Length: 81
Image 1 (cartoon, rainbow, N blue to C red):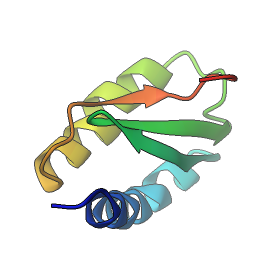
Image 2: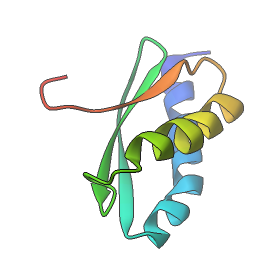
Image 3: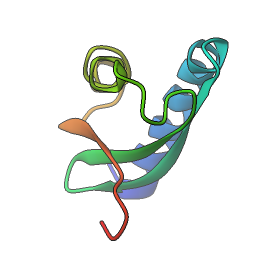
Image 4: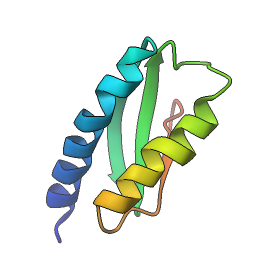
């Protein structure tokens, strides 16, 4: 499968997840897909939240791995990454 197809699937899944993140005052932004990892930015109430690691690993990452082949994990995008 081509990278653009995987990216399209990732974006579709993130759009399904977004309303649940929005409910708590947060949001997420897809940054890139590289070497099997999805890089995202967390926005709003999610930025700096103490539960962000759990939200990413047990929520976003678990769903993406389940729904999109080739996903190794999800990482928070850091400046200059």
